[in-house]
Length: 448
Image 1 (cartoon, rainbow, N blue to C red):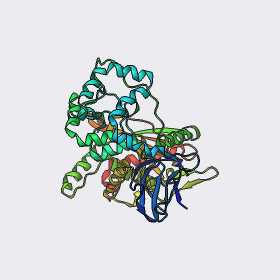
Image 2: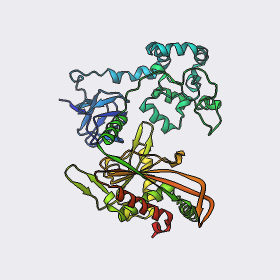
Image 3: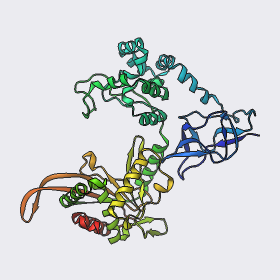
Image 4: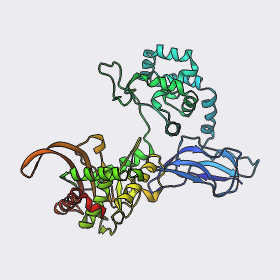
Protein backbone atom coordinates (compact mmCIF):
# COMPACT_ATOMS: atom_id res chain seq x y z
CA UNK A 1 0.00 0.00 0.00
CA UNK A 2 1.31 3.43 -0.97
CA UNK A 3 2.48 5.84 1.75
CA UNK A 4 1.02 9.36 1.66
CA UNK A 5 3.39 12.19 2.56
CA UNK A 6 1.48 15.09 4.08
CA UNK A 7 2.37 18.72 4.75
CA UNK A 8 4.34 18.63 8.03
CA UNK A 9 4.50 21.32 10.71
CA UNK A 10 7.88 22.93 10.08
CA UNK A 11 7.55 25.83 12.54
CA UNK A 12 5.66 26.49 15.75
CA UNK A 13 3.29 29.02 14.18
CA UNK A 14 2.83 27.29 10.82
CA UNK A 15 -0.71 26.48 9.68
CA UNK A 16 -0.13 26.26 5.91
CA UNK A 17 2.94 25.88 3.74
CA UNK A 18 3.70 27.05 0.22
CA UNK A 19 5.24 24.39 -1.99
CA UNK A 20 8.08 26.36 -3.60
CA UNK A 21 9.35 23.63 -5.92
CA UNK A 22 9.61 19.89 -6.30
CA UNK A 23 13.12 18.41 -6.34
CA UNK A 24 11.79 15.03 -7.45
CA UNK A 25 9.18 14.10 -10.03
CA UNK A 26 6.67 11.32 -10.50
CA UNK A 27 8.43 8.06 -11.29
CA UNK A 28 11.64 8.94 -9.45
CA UNK A 29 13.05 6.39 -7.03
CA UNK A 30 13.51 7.81 -3.51
CA UNK A 31 14.70 6.59 -0.17
CA UNK A 32 14.25 7.69 3.41
CA UNK A 33 16.18 10.88 4.06
CA UNK A 34 15.99 12.23 0.49
CA UNK A 35 14.84 15.82 0.02
CA UNK A 36 11.62 15.85 -1.99
CA UNK A 37 10.74 19.54 -2.18
CA UNK A 38 11.22 23.01 -0.73
CA UNK A 39 8.39 24.35 1.43
CA UNK A 40 7.98 27.98 2.44
CA UNK A 41 6.61 28.43 5.95
CA UNK A 42 5.65 31.65 7.71
CA UNK A 43 9.32 32.17 8.56
CA UNK A 44 11.66 30.44 6.11
CA UNK A 45 12.01 28.00 3.24
CA UNK A 46 12.54 24.48 4.56
CA UNK A 47 13.33 21.12 2.98
CA UNK A 48 10.65 18.42 2.82
CA UNK A 49 12.18 15.07 3.73
CA UNK A 50 11.08 11.65 2.55
CA UNK A 51 10.48 9.02 5.22
CA UNK A 52 9.95 6.00 2.96
CA UNK A 53 11.80 3.96 0.36
CA UNK A 54 10.12 3.50 -2.98
CA UNK A 55 8.96 5.42 -6.03
CA UNK A 56 7.01 8.67 -6.25
CA UNK A 57 3.72 7.42 -7.62
CA UNK A 58 1.67 10.61 -7.56
CA UNK A 59 2.14 14.30 -6.81
CA UNK A 60 -1.01 15.92 -5.44
CA UNK A 61 0.08 19.57 -5.14
CA UNK A 62 1.75 21.68 -7.79
CA UNK A 63 4.65 24.04 -7.20
CA UNK A 64 3.43 27.39 -5.90
CA UNK A 65 0.35 25.96 -4.17
CA UNK A 66 -0.50 26.68 -0.54
CA UNK A 67 -1.16 23.46 1.34
CA UNK A 68 -2.65 23.20 4.84
CA UNK A 69 -1.05 21.09 7.55
CA UNK A 70 -1.87 17.42 7.13
CA UNK A 71 -2.93 17.78 3.50
CA UNK A 72 -1.40 15.24 1.05
CA UNK A 73 1.61 16.26 -1.02
CA UNK A 74 2.59 13.03 -2.76
CA UNK A 75 2.37 9.25 -2.60
CA UNK A 76 5.39 6.91 -2.35
CA UNK A 77 5.08 3.18 -3.01
CA UNK A 78 6.20 0.25 -5.14
CA UNK A 79 6.88 0.85 -8.86
CA UNK A 80 3.74 0.32 -10.92
CA UNK A 81 1.43 0.56 -7.93
CA UNK A 82 -1.64 2.68 -8.64
CA UNK A 83 -2.83 5.34 -6.25
CA UNK A 84 -5.70 7.80 -6.33
CA UNK A 85 -5.92 11.23 -4.75
CA UNK A 86 -7.23 11.01 -1.17
CA UNK A 87 -10.94 11.54 -0.65
CA UNK A 88 -11.96 15.10 -1.37
CA UNK A 89 -8.64 15.85 -3.09
CA UNK A 90 -7.74 16.03 -6.72
CA UNK A 91 -4.54 15.75 -8.67
CA UNK A 92 -5.71 18.45 -11.07
CA UNK A 93 -3.44 21.17 -9.70
CA UNK A 94 -0.32 19.23 -10.68
CA UNK A 95 -1.73 18.68 -14.15
CA UNK A 96 -2.03 22.41 -14.69
CA UNK A 97 1.72 22.78 -15.09
CA UNK A 98 1.80 21.35 -18.62
CA UNK A 99 -0.64 23.87 -20.11
CA UNK A 100 1.52 26.60 -18.58
CA UNK A 101 4.56 25.34 -20.44
CA UNK A 102 2.93 24.32 -23.70
CA UNK A 103 0.39 27.10 -24.22
CA UNK A 104 1.62 30.30 -22.61
CA UNK A 105 0.28 32.28 -25.55
CA UNK A 106 -3.15 30.72 -25.15
CA UNK A 107 -3.14 31.62 -21.48
CA UNK A 108 -2.28 35.20 -22.33
CA UNK A 109 -5.45 35.37 -24.42
CA UNK A 110 -7.58 33.60 -21.80
CA UNK A 111 -6.35 35.59 -18.82
CA UNK A 112 -8.24 38.83 -19.61
CA UNK A 113 -11.46 36.81 -19.87
CA UNK A 114 -10.94 35.61 -16.30
CA UNK A 115 -10.14 39.04 -14.91
CA UNK A 116 -12.64 41.38 -13.31
CA UNK A 117 -14.58 43.86 -15.47
CA UNK A 118 -12.37 46.72 -14.33
CA UNK A 119 -9.31 44.87 -15.58
CA UNK A 120 -11.06 44.24 -18.89
CA UNK A 121 -11.60 47.97 -19.39
CA UNK A 122 -7.98 48.68 -18.63
CA UNK A 123 -6.91 45.96 -21.06
CA UNK A 124 -8.98 47.67 -23.77
CA UNK A 125 -7.20 50.97 -23.05
CA UNK A 126 -3.84 49.22 -23.52
CA UNK A 127 -4.94 47.33 -26.63
CA UNK A 128 -2.41 48.91 -29.05
CA UNK A 129 0.44 47.81 -26.79
CA UNK A 130 -1.02 44.33 -26.48
CA UNK A 131 -1.35 44.03 -30.26
CA UNK A 132 2.24 45.06 -30.80
CA UNK A 133 3.32 42.36 -28.38
CA UNK A 134 1.18 39.76 -30.12
CA UNK A 135 2.88 40.64 -33.41
CA UNK A 136 6.22 39.61 -31.90
CA UNK A 137 5.60 36.63 -29.61
CA UNK A 138 9.30 36.07 -28.97
CA UNK A 139 9.49 39.50 -27.32
CA UNK A 140 6.12 39.50 -25.62
CA UNK A 141 7.50 38.59 -22.23
CA UNK A 142 10.20 41.23 -22.42
CA UNK A 143 8.20 44.28 -23.46
CA UNK A 144 5.52 44.83 -20.85
CA UNK A 145 2.94 47.59 -21.14
CA UNK A 146 3.25 48.37 -17.44
CA UNK A 147 2.78 51.92 -16.21
CA UNK A 148 5.63 53.49 -14.28
CA UNK A 149 5.29 52.77 -10.57
CA UNK A 150 2.68 50.04 -11.06
CA UNK A 151 3.04 47.17 -8.60
CA UNK A 152 4.23 43.96 -10.20
CA UNK A 153 1.89 41.01 -9.75
CA UNK A 154 3.96 37.85 -9.46
CA UNK A 155 3.54 34.42 -7.88
CA UNK A 156 5.89 33.47 -5.01
CA UNK A 157 7.48 30.74 -7.11
CA UNK A 158 8.04 33.07 -10.07
CA UNK A 159 9.56 35.70 -7.80
CA UNK A 160 11.99 33.18 -6.32
CA UNK A 161 12.97 32.02 -9.81
CA UNK A 162 13.44 35.63 -10.96
CA UNK A 163 15.76 36.29 -8.02
CA UNK A 164 17.79 33.17 -8.83
CA UNK A 165 18.17 34.14 -12.50
CA UNK A 166 18.73 37.85 -11.85
CA UNK A 167 15.64 38.92 -13.80
CA UNK A 168 13.75 42.11 -12.96
CA UNK A 169 10.04 41.14 -12.71
CA UNK A 170 9.09 44.67 -13.82
CA UNK A 171 10.55 43.85 -17.26
CA UNK A 172 8.36 40.76 -17.71
CA UNK A 173 4.78 40.57 -18.97
CA UNK A 174 2.65 38.11 -17.04
CA UNK A 175 0.49 35.52 -18.80
CA UNK A 176 -1.44 34.51 -15.70
CA UNK A 177 -4.90 35.75 -14.63
CA UNK A 178 -5.01 39.54 -14.48
CA UNK A 179 -1.49 39.79 -15.89
CA UNK A 180 0.09 37.88 -12.98
CA UNK A 181 3.64 36.71 -13.69
CA UNK A 182 4.04 32.94 -13.40
CA UNK A 183 7.02 30.60 -13.65
CA UNK A 184 6.77 30.06 -17.42
CA UNK A 185 7.03 33.83 -17.95
CA UNK A 186 10.31 34.00 -16.01
CA UNK A 187 11.68 30.96 -17.81
CA UNK A 188 10.85 32.57 -21.18
CA UNK A 189 12.45 35.85 -20.11
CA UNK A 190 15.62 33.98 -19.11
CA UNK A 191 15.87 32.58 -22.64
CA UNK A 192 15.48 36.06 -24.17
CA UNK A 193 17.52 38.40 -21.94
CA UNK A 194 18.09 41.16 -24.51
CA UNK A 195 14.42 42.14 -24.95
CA UNK A 196 14.11 42.15 -21.15
CA UNK A 197 16.85 44.77 -20.93
CA UNK A 198 15.04 46.99 -23.43
CA UNK A 199 11.99 47.07 -21.24
CA UNK A 200 13.83 49.05 -18.59
CA UNK A 201 14.74 51.91 -20.94
CA UNK A 202 11.83 53.98 -19.73
CA UNK A 203 13.70 55.26 -16.67
CA UNK A 204 17.25 56.09 -15.69
CA UNK A 205 19.17 53.70 -13.47
CA UNK A 206 18.87 54.44 -9.79
CA UNK A 207 16.13 57.02 -10.30
CA UNK A 208 12.93 57.16 -8.27
CA UNK A 209 10.39 54.81 -9.86
CA UNK A 210 7.35 56.02 -7.97
CA UNK A 211 5.66 57.41 -11.06
CA UNK A 212 5.75 60.36 -13.45
CA UNK A 213 4.30 63.76 -12.66
CA UNK A 214 1.17 64.24 -14.75
CA UNK A 215 0.76 60.52 -15.50
CA UNK A 216 -2.79 59.50 -16.34
CA UNK A 217 -4.80 56.40 -15.55
CA UNK A 218 -5.13 54.30 -12.38
CA UNK A 219 -2.20 53.99 -9.98
CA UNK A 220 -2.62 50.19 -10.02
CA UNK A 221 -5.17 47.48 -10.79
CA UNK A 222 -8.15 47.05 -8.48
CA UNK A 223 -7.53 43.62 -7.05
CA UNK A 224 -7.58 41.38 -4.00
CA UNK A 225 -4.52 39.37 -3.01
CA UNK A 226 -4.56 36.26 -0.86
CA UNK A 227 -2.71 36.92 2.38
CA UNK A 228 0.58 35.04 2.45
CA UNK A 229 1.41 32.71 5.31
CA UNK A 230 4.06 35.10 6.61
CA UNK A 231 1.83 38.19 6.38
CA UNK A 232 -0.99 36.37 8.16
CA UNK A 233 1.25 35.43 11.09
CA UNK A 234 2.68 38.95 11.26
CA UNK A 235 -0.83 40.41 11.36
CA UNK A 236 -1.89 38.07 14.15
CA UNK A 237 1.20 38.64 16.30
CA UNK A 238 1.29 42.42 15.91
CA UNK A 239 -2.42 42.75 16.65
CA UNK A 240 -1.89 40.65 19.75
CA UNK A 241 1.12 42.76 20.74
CA UNK A 242 -0.59 46.10 20.28
CA UNK A 243 -3.84 45.09 22.01
CA UNK A 244 -2.44 43.09 24.92
CA UNK A 245 0.89 44.78 25.72
CA UNK A 246 0.83 48.25 27.36
CA UNK A 247 3.45 50.01 25.23
CA UNK A 248 5.27 53.15 26.31
CA UNK A 249 7.95 55.01 24.40
CA UNK A 250 11.17 56.83 25.25
CA UNK A 251 13.46 58.78 22.89
CA UNK A 252 17.09 59.73 23.25
CA UNK A 253 19.37 61.63 20.86
CA UNK A 254 23.02 60.65 20.68
CA UNK A 255 26.11 62.27 19.18
CA UNK A 256 26.86 59.99 16.25
CA UNK A 257 30.17 61.57 15.22
CA UNK A 258 32.45 59.37 17.40
CA UNK A 259 30.71 56.22 16.17
CA UNK A 260 30.89 57.25 12.50
CA UNK A 261 34.55 58.27 12.84
CA UNK A 262 35.58 54.97 14.47
CA UNK A 263 33.62 52.99 11.91
CA UNK A 264 35.36 54.79 9.06
CA UNK A 265 38.80 54.22 10.60
CA UNK A 266 38.16 50.51 11.16
CA UNK A 267 36.70 49.91 7.71
CA UNK A 268 39.57 51.74 6.02
CA UNK A 269 42.26 50.04 8.08
CA UNK A 270 40.77 46.56 7.72
CA UNK A 271 39.54 46.87 4.14
CA UNK A 272 42.07 44.30 2.87
CA UNK A 273 40.77 41.84 5.44
CA UNK A 274 37.26 42.18 4.06
CA UNK A 275 35.93 43.89 7.19
CA UNK A 276 33.06 46.32 6.66
CA UNK A 277 31.21 47.32 9.81
CA UNK A 278 27.82 48.98 9.58
CA UNK A 279 26.17 51.39 12.00
CA UNK A 280 23.69 48.62 12.76
CA UNK A 281 26.55 46.35 13.88
CA UNK A 282 27.49 48.94 16.51
CA UNK A 283 23.83 49.25 17.55
CA UNK A 284 23.47 45.48 17.99
CA UNK A 285 26.66 45.18 20.01
CA UNK A 286 25.86 48.37 21.95
CA UNK A 287 22.41 47.02 22.82
CA UNK A 288 23.95 43.85 24.24
CA UNK A 289 26.32 45.92 26.39
CA UNK A 290 23.48 48.18 27.56
CA UNK A 291 21.50 45.05 28.53
CA UNK A 292 24.49 43.95 30.58
CA UNK A 293 24.37 47.29 32.45
CA UNK A 294 20.56 47.35 32.77
CA UNK A 295 19.55 43.66 32.69
CA UNK A 296 15.94 44.29 33.80
CA UNK A 297 15.11 45.14 30.17
CA UNK A 298 16.30 41.70 29.07
CA UNK A 299 13.09 40.01 30.19
CA UNK A 300 9.69 38.65 29.18
CA UNK A 301 6.19 38.73 30.69
CA UNK A 302 4.80 35.23 31.35
CA UNK A 303 1.48 35.99 33.00
CA UNK A 304 2.07 35.00 36.62
CA UNK A 305 5.82 35.54 36.45
CA UNK A 306 8.50 37.63 34.73
CA UNK A 307 11.39 35.75 33.17
CA UNK A 308 14.80 37.46 33.28
CA UNK A 309 17.39 36.18 30.81
CA UNK A 310 21.06 35.71 31.61
CA UNK A 311 22.16 36.03 27.98
CA UNK A 312 21.56 38.84 25.49
CA UNK A 313 20.19 37.20 22.36
CA UNK A 314 19.73 40.29 20.18
CA UNK A 315 17.45 39.97 17.15
CA UNK A 316 17.15 42.44 14.29
CA UNK A 317 14.37 43.05 11.80
CA UNK A 318 14.98 42.14 8.15
CA UNK A 319 12.48 43.36 5.55
CA UNK A 320 11.20 40.80 3.04
CA UNK A 321 8.89 41.31 0.04
CA UNK A 322 5.90 39.88 1.93
CA UNK A 323 6.78 40.85 5.50
CA UNK A 324 9.72 40.75 7.86
CA UNK A 325 11.64 38.32 10.00
CA UNK A 326 13.92 38.74 13.01
CA UNK A 327 17.08 36.61 12.93
CA UNK A 328 18.88 36.35 16.26
CA UNK A 329 22.53 36.96 17.14
CA UNK A 330 22.85 34.56 20.07
CA UNK A 331 25.03 35.56 23.05
CA UNK A 332 25.79 38.97 21.55
CA UNK A 333 27.13 40.10 24.93
CA UNK A 334 29.99 37.59 24.69
CA UNK A 335 30.91 38.28 21.05
CA UNK A 336 33.17 40.95 19.61
CA UNK A 337 31.69 43.56 17.31
CA UNK A 338 33.46 41.83 14.43
CA UNK A 339 31.80 38.52 15.30
CA UNK A 340 28.43 40.26 15.64
CA UNK A 341 28.93 41.93 12.24
CA UNK A 342 29.87 38.69 10.48
CA UNK A 343 26.99 36.76 12.00
CA UNK A 344 24.45 39.50 11.34
CA UNK A 345 25.43 39.70 7.66
CA UNK A 346 25.22 35.93 7.28
CA UNK A 347 21.83 35.78 9.01
CA UNK A 348 20.56 38.73 6.98
CA UNK A 349 21.40 36.97 3.71
CA UNK A 350 19.78 33.74 4.85
CA UNK A 351 16.70 35.74 5.88
CA UNK A 352 16.38 37.40 2.46
CA UNK A 353 16.80 34.00 0.79
CA UNK A 354 14.26 32.53 3.24
CA UNK A 355 16.77 29.89 4.27
CA UNK A 356 16.84 30.53 8.01
CA UNK A 357 16.51 27.53 10.28
CA UNK A 358 14.02 27.77 13.18
CA UNK A 359 16.76 28.12 15.79
CA UNK A 360 18.16 31.12 13.87
CA UNK A 361 15.01 33.25 14.22
CA UNK A 362 13.69 32.13 17.61
CA UNK A 363 14.88 32.71 21.17
CA UNK A 364 15.60 36.44 20.91
CA UNK A 365 15.45 38.40 24.18
CA UNK A 366 15.67 41.92 22.71
CA UNK A 367 15.01 43.30 19.24
CA UNK A 368 16.44 46.11 17.09
CA UNK A 369 14.51 47.63 14.17
CA UNK A 370 16.51 50.02 11.97
CA UNK A 371 14.88 52.30 9.38
CA UNK A 372 17.76 54.75 9.32
CA UNK A 373 18.93 53.55 5.92
CA UNK A 374 15.55 54.61 4.55
CA UNK A 375 15.87 58.17 5.82
CA UNK A 376 13.40 57.87 8.72
CA UNK A 377 14.57 60.15 11.58
CA UNK A 378 12.45 58.52 14.31
CA UNK A 379 9.70 55.92 14.67
CA UNK A 380 7.92 53.84 17.30
CA UNK A 381 8.24 50.08 16.64
CA UNK A 382 5.76 47.51 17.96
CA UNK A 383 7.15 45.07 20.52
CA UNK A 384 7.96 41.61 19.20
CA UNK A 385 6.52 39.16 21.80
CA UNK A 386 7.69 37.68 24.07
CA UNK A 387 10.37 40.42 24.30
CA UNK A 388 9.78 43.19 26.83
CA UNK A 389 11.25 45.88 24.58
CA UNK A 390 12.33 46.81 21.06
CA UNK A 391 14.68 49.55 19.89
CA UNK A 392 13.85 51.78 16.94
CA UNK A 393 16.89 53.26 15.15
CA UNK A 394 16.53 56.38 13.00
CA UNK A 395 18.79 57.93 10.39
CA UNK A 396 21.85 60.06 11.10
CA UNK A 397 20.90 63.74 10.84
CA UNK A 398 23.33 66.59 10.17
CA UNK A 399 22.21 69.69 12.07
CA UNK A 400 23.42 72.49 14.36
CA UNK A 401 24.36 71.27 17.84
CA UNK A 402 25.91 72.89 20.91
CA UNK A 403 29.40 71.67 21.87
CA UNK A 404 31.52 73.36 24.51
CA UNK A 405 29.16 76.32 24.51
CA UNK A 406 29.47 76.80 20.74
CA UNK A 407 26.98 76.13 17.97
CA UNK A 408 28.60 73.80 15.46
CA UNK A 409 27.52 71.38 12.75
CA UNK A 410 27.04 67.91 14.22
CA UNK A 411 25.61 64.51 13.40
CA UNK A 412 22.94 63.07 15.65
CA UNK A 413 21.03 59.81 15.84
CA UNK A 414 17.67 59.27 17.56
CA UNK A 415 16.93 55.99 19.32
CA UNK A 416 13.42 55.06 20.47
CA UNK A 417 12.67 52.38 23.04
CA UNK A 418 9.23 50.73 22.93
CA UNK A 419 8.78 48.91 26.25
CA UNK A 420 6.22 46.63 27.91
CA UNK A 421 5.10 48.55 31.01
CA UNK A 422 4.17 45.29 32.75
CA UNK A 423 7.88 44.44 32.84
CA UNK A 424 9.81 47.68 32.33
CA UNK A 425 9.07 50.90 34.20
CA UNK A 426 9.88 54.32 32.81
CA UNK A 427 12.95 54.79 35.00
CA UNK A 428 14.40 51.44 33.93
CA UNK A 429 13.79 52.25 30.26
CA UNK A 430 15.52 55.61 30.73
CA UNK A 431 18.50 53.91 32.39
CA UNK A 432 18.81 51.52 29.46
CA UNK A 433 18.83 54.34 26.89
CA UNK A 434 21.36 56.26 28.97
CA UNK A 435 23.62 53.20 29.05
CA UNK A 436 23.24 52.71 25.31
CA UNK A 437 24.01 56.38 24.69
CA UNK A 438 27.17 56.09 26.81
CA UNK A 439 28.62 53.14 24.89
CA UNK A 440 27.69 54.49 21.44
CA UNK A 441 29.19 57.91 22.15
CA UNK A 442 32.38 56.16 23.33
CA UNK A 443 32.35 53.34 20.75
CA UNK A 444 35.93 52.26 21.46
CA UNK A 445 34.46 50.59 24.56
CA UNK A 446 32.78 48.11 22.22
CA UNK A 447 36.18 46.95 21.01
CA UNK A 448 37.38 45.94 24.48
